[in-house]
Image (cartoon, rainbow, N blue to C red; front, top):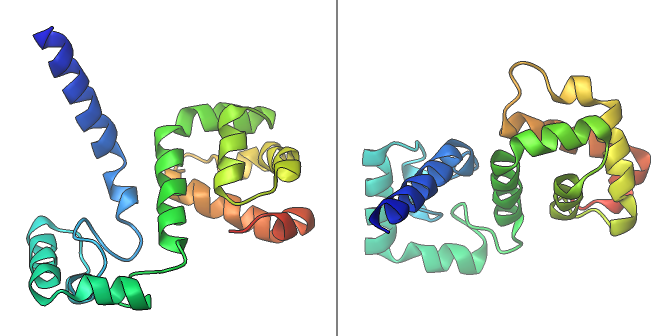
Length: 165
């Protein structure tokens, strides 16, 4: 029982830690949005503690969230971007396999996360299959894959209309 709990805890730690760099890649770190994210934008432990302290002592996060300022958004763009990055990071190998064939459960889920209509999921699969060699190069990371897929959607006449990226 104890070994099982330790294994589960270690697995969760590794799973969450593996995507940490991409999770905090957009605008702010673990301290969240607010004045602290504007002043202390680098994602180092010391600076994030200072950012959290600034946010906590000046009560500016509520203002930022309410007004959509201080790296906080009210439209969910950052939230959606992070969800997409986390999904790709956690399903990278499966997505690589599915994108090579142009179909699969993870690819359909990514299509949904990218705001594509259900009818356009097959078109996204075709785009991924056709551009597989461009999407998956030696240096591909979850972040670069997301960026390349979004570029492909913007360039595709059908997907650019049916996906809300």
